Image 1: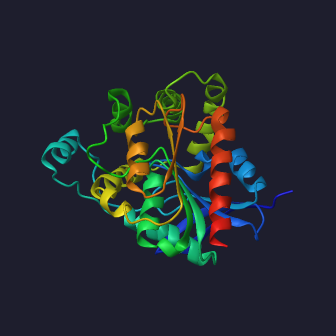
Image 2 (image 1 turned 120 degrees about the vertical axis):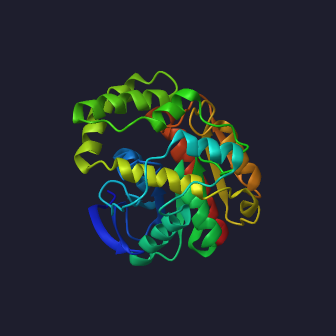
Length: 304
């Protein structure tokens, strides 16, 4: 039986970070970093348990400005005009903080937990944060797995119109509206028919809602991504064993984003998952968990 420590909060990099640990204390530490506006529970409990069963000490946490971690202040809602200026005139977006600050949160969490180095697995914006940790604190990273993420390279195709509209939609005004929107959002992001996921969406939405929403925080996170620019050139210098996982039908971070990441990092392995969008549906878990397991344990053996 794998140990499980319920959620706790610690102070790191000047903020409160809510985290949860699955697995034994002496197992290989593996940090799961979630994406834009997504709480740590978007790494499903069973997903975490299955990774722990493969011999990892799995740590998931709420990024700053989401869930039970510190909510910051400042910044206005992003406008379509700012996006156009960024895209066509390269005029940077103003941001309260950048991805490097979120990378420092991750390292601060590791410091406080007494973890010298860990395997990093990041999804979407979490992949960008994991890349930034690997670039800025390489000695802290045993292996990098970047899922449905990208390099920040402006040449990667933008989201589909439907996925972009969802990102820019005004926040829901009631719990009922949130639950409906949650279902609609994930239907777009999954980009396919997943009745087994849709059946669970209302319960998942309830859980997210009960932990607390922070629409302004999601806006600040989005600005952090856009203000951080491209990592492509810097990624050429990465020596950390890297695995890139991406869905072939991702409507938000297009498949080219994953390919660009793998091409930018020397020796990176690329796993394209047929029929996967911008989500981690249960039917793909065996392939995803198997790949993370093989990659991280392989890197641990090499390091030894």
